[in-house]
Amino acid sequence: MRPVTLLVLLLALPVICLGAGPGPVLIAHRGLHKAAPQNSLPALREAIWAHVDYVEVDTRTTADGLVVDHHDADLPGLGEIASLPYSRIKALDLGAGLARWYRYTRVPLFVEELALGKGRVHFYVDMKAIAPEHLVWLLQQFDMVSDAVCYGGVDTLATLRRLEPRLEVMPHLPPAEQVPALVANLHPRYVESGWQGSPELAAVAHQHGAKLFLDIADTSPEYVLRCARAGVDGLQTDDPEKVMRILEQAGFRPPRTIADKSKGGDPLDAARQAIARGKTPLRATVHRTADSLLACILPHLGWPPPKGIAWGKTRYAVVRGGYPGSPAVPLLGEVLAVARGRCGVVLTLAEADREQALRLAKEFGMEGQVQFTTAGR
Image 1 (tube, rainbow, N blue to C red):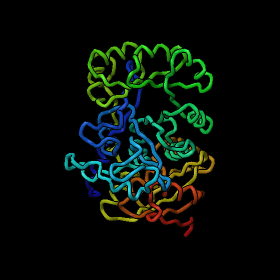
Image 2: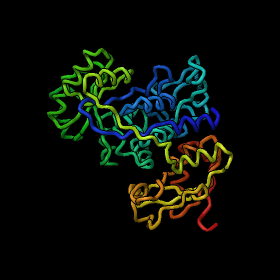
Image 3: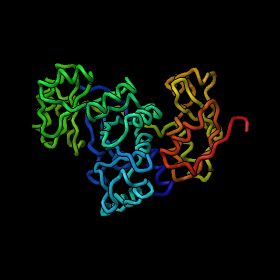
């Protein structure tokens, strides 16, 4: 895809102000894939445009330690994901046989999805084959711990909870007699029931202080409204647009509030425009915040740092939007996602850890695109 085309697509993405409604939240199973390839960046992008609340992703780890989104353990004609480097995996064309604008769609990296979805959608993370420590680190680097709910086995989720207590974990809802033991062990605020689950299980979940996310194959108005009336808290479906219309027409879902991020611009918009105009490489100054996140300043694009910040003593939430009139400060992962495959990046490290920045660059497969300098040079 040409850079200018990508720029138009990215600037058109809405930012969704997520708010509680009277009915269930909507989860796009593997993204919105009625036309787009499932588990792909186009499927995620179209789910965002459709204003869903969550997108379900299937996380798997490659032979070279990168995390991709793909449901099956094997890739057609290539073999098992766990035994393949990403350089071979990305050669698979997910869009083969689909509309021409989906041609050459590749298996996405999870970090690409985090960068695209940040501030726009929540993630339902199915931990197919990913180490809990790896998942926690990635969500922390994108400041998205509060934007994800993680599904997996009880032992895996217990490890997640120990590593990052703020992270929402979601086990499968067991038979009623086993629920008290699950609650005592994990204290989940969310539980999941598969395609064979009943909407009436919401009462069981609520009795133990948890919300129920239910997978549904039946998207008839009768069944969707039965779920809503039973108090199901989230519906995972392959057709979220149809389910959304049913809920809206029945008054279970109010219109969403949409903010157009393309108005007014921000540093990431400036970076995309610079790339489209050939003003590369991107140059950024990297600071480490009090909560160990890597924040990027892009002064050469007209976005100077906010004033009065003691970087090592200030949490990222304050840096990003806590100073009236100051620019939004992006994270390093967001900047790398903009530059990936399009241009080089020169990072000036100011109170930032080179190893942490290099590890994040490796998550994008960008070791060869990133150069490091130190402040004052």
